[in-house]
Amino acid sequence: MTHSSATSKITPTRRILKAARALFASAALASTLAVEASPRTEPKPDWSTHDMPSQKGRIVLVTGGTSGMGYEDALALTRAGAEVIIAARNAERGREAIANIKQAVPGARVQFEALDLSNLQSVRDLANRLQGRLPKLDVLINNAAIMSPPVRGISVDGYEMQLATNYLGHFALTGLLMPLLRKSEDPRVVSLSSIAAGRAKLNFDDLQAERNYDPFATYSQSKLAVLKWSLHLQQRSDAAGWGIRSIAAHPGVAVTELIARGPGLDSEFGKQWAVDRDVYHSAAQGALPTLYAATALEAVGGAYYGPTGDNEKRGPLGFAKMPPAAADRSDADALWQLSERLTGVIYR
Image (cartoon, rainbow, N blue to C red):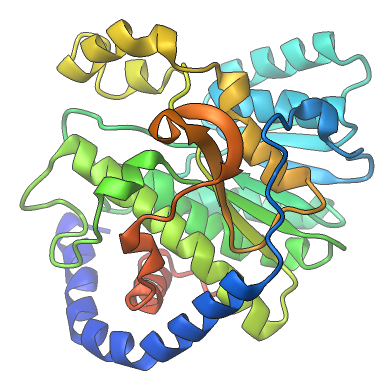
């Protein structure tokens, strides 16, 4: 797909956006009220991996599980007895991650699958491979992300790279794996947003940042899209009877390789990060909201979990603050329809 063809797909969205807002505003309000009225058990503030129920018999797919919080997810879930599939781009890092997990957890059931989320054909190839050999999928953890590359990148499909990797790839992967998820007795989709989503808005006039590329603003927008989609997936699951628990989480600010691989440690962002990093928490701590959403019996579909201290950068586990732009569901269906067109994936 050429760069110009990607743009032409976005333009019609403006024509449907106004109508979609009017059509779905009342339904979104009703859904929001229903979620707020449903039982919401606060997580134990000191919840840890020791509180995870056994995951024996459960099959979990973690995107970006070769390092950082994705690796910590895979390690903890394997320890709890799950069969874990790590899906990521770098096969060598995948082999290293699996070797480390097997050393830490004798008898671990863990394997690597190649996946480039920015390439929709790679996403389809993985989904096809898993459909061919898995009896079900119990948990999908949409963890992988890139953050604020200084130069605007374009995916092989013609989309801005952060939107393609952080959001569109996960939207497509989840939709393609729906048949496997629906075979589980307790299917969960856990999608990683960010506190950066609180500073974002969806700019349908320039969603691909073609006219104005701001690295961090574009990253924030991609994470807002993830959060809105996660909430809307729960709404659609409830309406269609899919039985999916769609849960969003964010890690606060955890020490991972995301900065080094994104803006770079020599950037202004990276230099400030180096000054502040000692006050942030570890990747293992940052993984706790995800692990809670993936395993806790009382985890709520349609909820958003994260640390609750220090402006949600770290601290005890709890319900995260919902950014106003995410709580506003009036454009959620327009985002969904646009995502279907850009990816060619229809949820069933």
